[in-house]
Length: 414
Image (cartoon, rainbow, N blue to C red; front, side, top):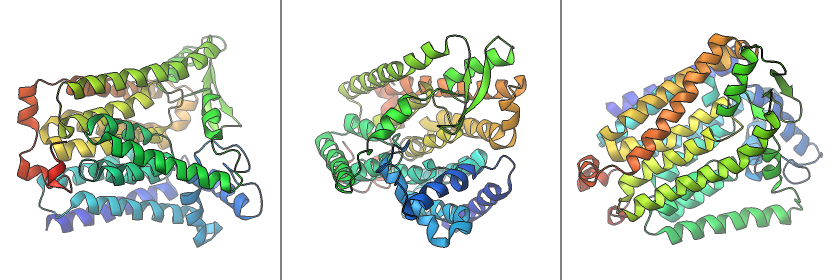
């Protein structure tokens, strides 16, 4: 009965969110039909292939899911995209539910449905929507099938780079980290090899395309410049970047801020890695170390990023779902905070996004609260890495319960 209700909820949620993608104001499917579709039509029409023949903002494998909806025809491309994401989510949902007898998995499934509703149409309408179900499966299989998990997450990272952070978290948390690292490197070598064999001299162009970007208005650093614009500080305003196809913000000292963000992100990642290594060396087990570490890595990429697209919020789903499955009650705080972040994100985009572009103080305040929630969540993740061993023992599921969360019981202790 519970599985049946969950699947009914899954269908209802995707019908509702998919419908919002098609009808909501603000054109939430704008990137899909106005950006992805022209790219793949150009590639299939004999023009240059993004990521191979010309520089591209995404890793090369992002072209694969962008091509698939074209099978329904150009006029049905948006609907085809929604169906593709729904199918991938259904696969991840089935793996999450498992045999249907694990209460933490059922709770995680209900949480995911609530998260999708609160996040709204953006949850289905970006390339990130393809990588999230892959990330969920990769993390759920990390303890028992580390090589398979590494391959899945690396493939996802070659669509949108953020799942690479989850690979890094597994390498630190798992005792068989060598297998994980080799599997990730081999998968990367295959992707690069195929790309170069196809004549692609721009396979790595997404790196330079990202580093050359300005401050996107939804980013945490961009939030500060939004307030300058809202307060009418001279030379502070929002503008549309025709090359990157996104709204960015400028103001006094913006060039310095842009130049500092990439090295600052690298330092933040190094700091997160150090915290993870210290927690691992303190004897933390994978079931208690991996969820907060994966969450911290994802939040590091969000907080210290000069890009702050609303779809970044959906990255939280994978580590929070893993945390609910493996740590139950200890993940109540991040689960609630992630729901709040999702709701505030949907409020800003797509419904009231025009207000944000006009730097309305109310919407800038809403965005500020959302961004502060990211910081609070990161603080929780850091604290959770160093929870006292007695508290850890109380929070980790009993052996019979953990076997429902990972495929192979013999790997639980890792």
